[in-house]
Image 1 (tube, one colour):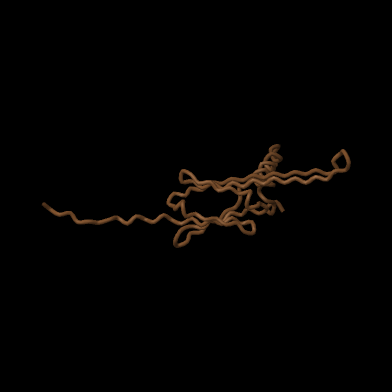
Image 2 (cartoon, rainbow, N blue to C red):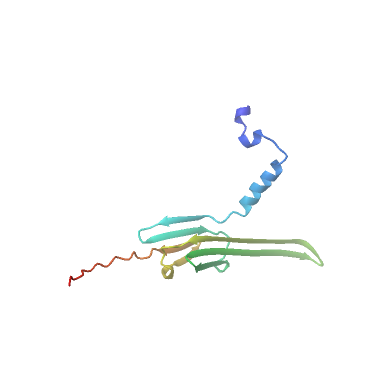
Length: 137
């Protein structure tokens, strides 16, 4: 029976409650998930942002860095005369930055559909070295 118990349950300490709190807190504030796909002409970045409106998402470019920020505020109230019967609020904010060295910044495009932000990131054209002949005098 002892061999079938997961390892983290085998050892008990007074810090178990802090460890589980840390794992739960880390999962709650985890950054949004992204997939980056390389294509022939560049990259496609897909960021999962379910529940956000297009207006809640900001994309900033600067210093070879692309930053995606999403912020969401929601509140619901039901009043019964002067005292609250129910009042709920939620707030969420996420931000991630990506190095875009080698990307043509002026040609980046973005679309948002069904909770997925898709960015097309075209690669910069590789400069072709110019060759020339030098005449001997």
